Each structure stands twice: as structure tokens, then as C-alpha cells.
Image 1: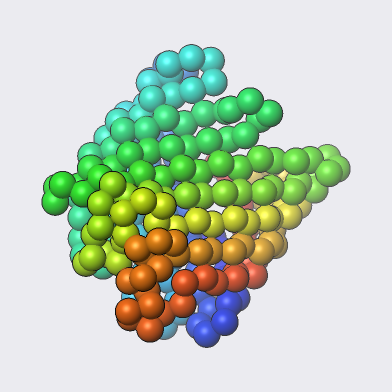
Image 2: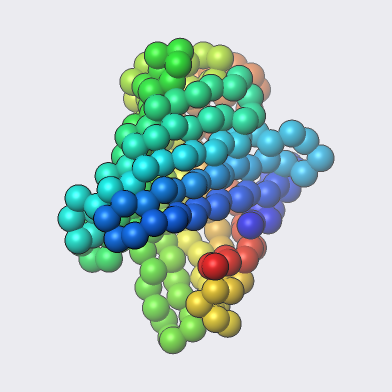
Length: 198
């Protein structure tokens, strides 16, 4: 759970993941979303995925995603999640909607331990689209990019408050759609939140 201070209206973000199963096969649940206080969420989604180990560090994931904000969409999902060289945690997925829209998301983060309890985490997220999706304000190609840095303190492995900064950009056709609506194409978020692990 995260509070985001930014120009205009302050906002919030959530990112929840959980799984049930053994080493080879798991069921994953994922949910994420964000918005501004006092308004409906700008984005919200849930995913249910079957995950199968395809190596010691990687899982293949297949399932479905449902958008809960904006024009509702249902997607088939295919992706891989795991640990890349240099201990980068990577989560990539391709999404094919019932409208025929093909999009993809790439997330990568790295935990850099400063002390036993203090951890610095750089994070990058890229969103891509195979075509223009005007009703969602998405242009073909690289749609959005986010780069962030968070510093957390682990009182315990299960509980770690953090603070940080994140920069967001809308790119290409997505930036053009934003300008037509009188919206900005970039934003800086100062964030504070709590990371839980059960």
C-alpha cells in the first residue's frame, strides 16, 4: 500500500501478489491499481494465473486478467516471472483482450542491501502496445515508462515501511492522446508506503 504525493491531487497505489502450491506448480493471484483521493481508481486489475517452473529461476504463467476501472476489459495472459542475472526480479507478461488488443508489460526491480535491515530498491516498468487503442488513451509502441527508487527498513521480513520517488512518462501516441485531453505527459511522485509479507 502506497501514498503518492504529486502535483495536483495526491494519490494511492496498491500491488498485491500471492500464491498457493508447490515448487513446480502454483496458482498466483495478482492485483494492482492506482488513483487520486476522492476519485474513482484510474486503473485497477486482478489476475488469476497458473504458474509452472521452467527452470530453477523461472516460472511460466498462463491465465486471465480482468480490468475493473475505465472501459472494462478481459485478457488472456502469458508471461514469465523469475530471477534474472545480477539478482534482478523480473515479471513480464503479454495480454490479449477480448477486443483483440495486444499489449505487454515488463517490470524489473533489484534489492540492494545497505545494511541488514536497510534496503534500496530501484525499479523500472515499461508498457507496450501492438496497436493504437484510442478508448484507453494508448498509442502503438512504447506506451508508458516508470522509473523509481525506494528505500525500505525491514523491522521484520514480513513488515517494512519505505519511502521513495518515482517518475512516470507517457510516450509516443499515448502522449499525443494525453495532450488532446489537456493532460500532462509526465509526473513525479514522492511515495511513502508499507510492504507486508505473509
